[in-house]
Each structure stands twice: as structure tokens, then as C-alpha cells.
Length: 265
Figure 1 (cartoon, rainbow, N blue to C red):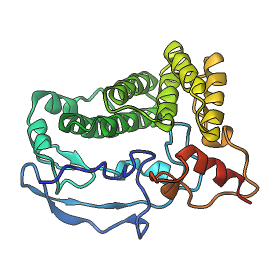
Figure 2 (cartoon, helix red, strand yellow):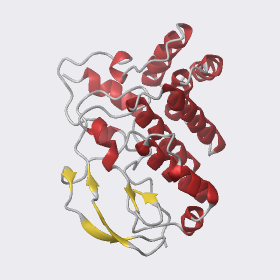
Figure 3 (cartoon, rainbow, N blue to C red):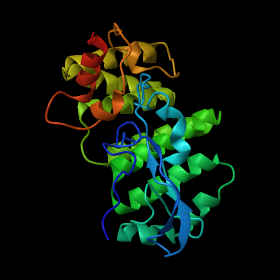
Figure 4 (cartoon, one colour):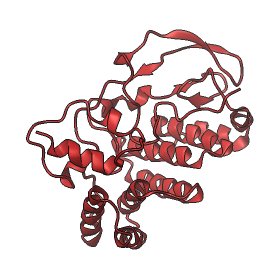
């Protein structure tokens, strides 16, 4: 069986990427790759976001409000993935463990957060630490929406730990670590990490974002801010931007592409 992809998190950046057709497909009977039970599931086909993403790259609306549709979950064994018809062998083992069972049954956590945390656990067990960090951050987004700030802060801290435990981070990923630390109110760590990145002479767009992060950290501002706060304002509203710019390429980095987008006339 193939290793699970980040699913709706193709570039592990800012949630689902736009497919050829927006919106959800019709429900279909899907056989769970872990337990073999069939259930009615819908494969999510996201629409392009139009609003500016947050500094941690949570997408803007209308995609922002569709998180409940990003993952499938088997109603029998609890396995969670973008498509439960596929599973890494390690994922099959992970679903049967006591920690996984406890996680999906924890009623003190918002239901949507539990789903993302369960997916993060599976990814971590397969060794996909950066993807697990993304899923954990998305659990924090769900906690934000559920008005559970303590949980959101804790899960941002967990996401940072997973990012740091994985392969070396590039400048763009490090910006997101800084934002997660700031949102988690770990201001000293955020300031140190931001300072190290700024001293490395990152690309112009990254430097602009990290300069904003440093100002916010100095103010001990742990609130949500968007990419539009760090980049030049557009002369017109961008359209369907973040699906394409989030994908990795051999060209300019993500923040540079965002900067160009916001300057476009």
C-alpha cells in the first residue's frame, strides 16, 4: 500500500488545493484501507480561496470555512485521512494503538480538532513529521474557531515541536514556526527564531514578513494577522490566488510569489 499523501494539504502549506471542479463530490461507498468496512464518504474538491491567508497560511474565505470537509473518517475504526481508501502500513498499526483510541474518544477536545489530531498522530507514526505538524496546526485552527484558546496555543506548540523534529526547515517554513510560536505566546522563542532568520538575509518577501513578526512579538501580540499586513496592498483584489502559489516550485519562493501577487495591478 502506498504512503498517505498530505491529502488536502498537497504542498503542506495552506489547506486543500483547488481541484478541477470546486465543491464537494457526491457521496460514495468507500472501503476503509485499515479495517475494510465500507461507509458513505465525500471526496472534498475545494474552491480557490479569495481572501488573504493568515501569516501561518491558513487560507482565506471561502476555503477557510470548509475545514470540516477536508478529512474523511471511518465510522468503524476511526481511521482519518483525506482518502481513507489508502493507508500506509504504519498507519494501519497506529489506528489500533491505545493512544489513537484515546485521542479520538477525548470529549474535552473539539470534534474537528480531534479529527486533525488523529490524522497528525497517524502521520507522525509514518515518519511524516512536517505533514504531522501541518495537521496539528490545523487542529489549532479548529480550536480557534471553537473559541478554545488554551488548546490552540498548546497545539501550535506541538506543531512547532514536530516541525523542528523533522528535516531542516527552509526560510518560508521558519516564518510559519515563528508565527506559531507568537500565537502560542512563546515570545522569547519566537523572538530568537525570528532574529536568527532575519540575520540570515532571507529573500525580500520573507524579510518583510519576518519584520512584521518581530514587531508583533515586541508588542506581545498573539493575535491573528494576515499576509496582507506584511505585503504591499494590491491595487485590485487578487483572484483565486493561494492554490497555485502554495505549491513548491523551482522558481521564486512562496513569500516572493505572494509579494508579486499583491503588487500586481
